[in-house]
Image (cartoon, rainbow, N blue to C red; front, side, top):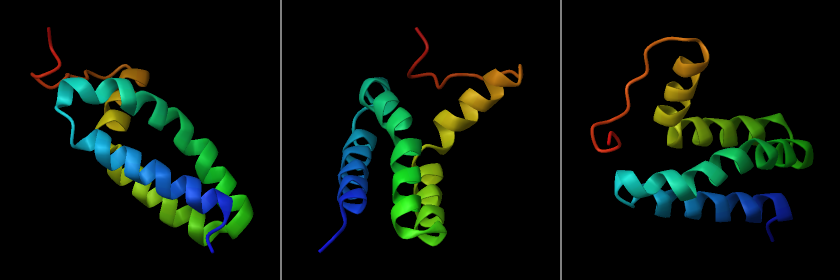
Length: 89
């Protein structure tokens, strides 16, 4: 049987996959809470199962959120960060 952190990790993965299937303009609203919850969930998994599971979860997280994280990092560093055409209004 899976531990509680891994069950929540699986649920997060399903929610992130469902969010990725939405049109780009609708991904923002469910994606933002997923982005906030992920580090807490990763730390919980890491504390319960060790660094190897944390590394696997971090790899999955960075794979799913590579573009939003790139955008946020560029904004934080003061570099130009363009939104996709679908999100410009």
